[in-house]
Length: 396
Image (tube, rainbow, N blue to C red; front, side, top):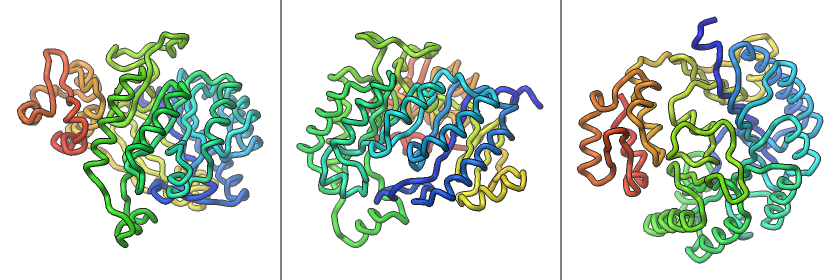
């Protein structure tokens, strides 16, 4: 085993099940039976056993789908397997939850095994918009579930919201933000609705059932940034806002190395944006370790079948040339308001941002989208609005 693979510090686990597939969702997920979920849990245990020797997780993220859809017995099984494989004790361990599938027993079980961060998929606090998106929870369930998580001992909770939802007005967006801020969560993730092919929302758009108002979407994003700043949330990535420690909130440990990143930033995602290695388990999950990118089959029965035969369930394997990987690392890191400290980039990629990408950096500064100092390069507020376009310039 090489030193590169001996201590991967981040683990992503994809739980592909939902009670109902949302209208906008393009992630691999499915509404499924208890029998397939049981089979998946058994297969995931096998996959954990296959990677445990190369994994010392400091961040863990269970995403989906809806991880909280797993029942108590299934969670017990997984958590005891992780205990047996010495995979507990991560500094940050996030589980995504739907407000309709949170119970005090489940929350306490997760907390007892070391889960210390919950990401709650709220999306909206307007009943009509929740229905429009195909969400199964009510606004009342959001408040009840949030209180349940606090009662179970969670001191680091993210609330997921969406804006530019069809028929959403600025008035509704302000009201949603008011109620979201009143929850006093530690983190907010706020995404503009994206119309992905093969989703019901995309089909409705193509059928002319509604129009996209780009100006309103832009105004909602600007409103979001302003109001978050006024409410004690620091904008640290295009769609993410977090609090700093203080006012009764102790900073998570260990403290983040870049003081520009707020204490309650999602460390797992910061590892992605800063080019770190990670294992990805579960159907459709991607992993990146030591120059090799792998992707699991986006097919739960096939995923299970491969693992039941003792095989890794890879659909693709891709070896990235160093410069190509460095370009991706540059692009991802520019999504963060802290941008790239030059030393940090060199450590992560082996390349110097100032030599290989000097032309692109100058172009973005001249465009008014970015700023460069002696120690770092970053996009400014206008540049972050067009982060995807800026990032493409750094790909090789």
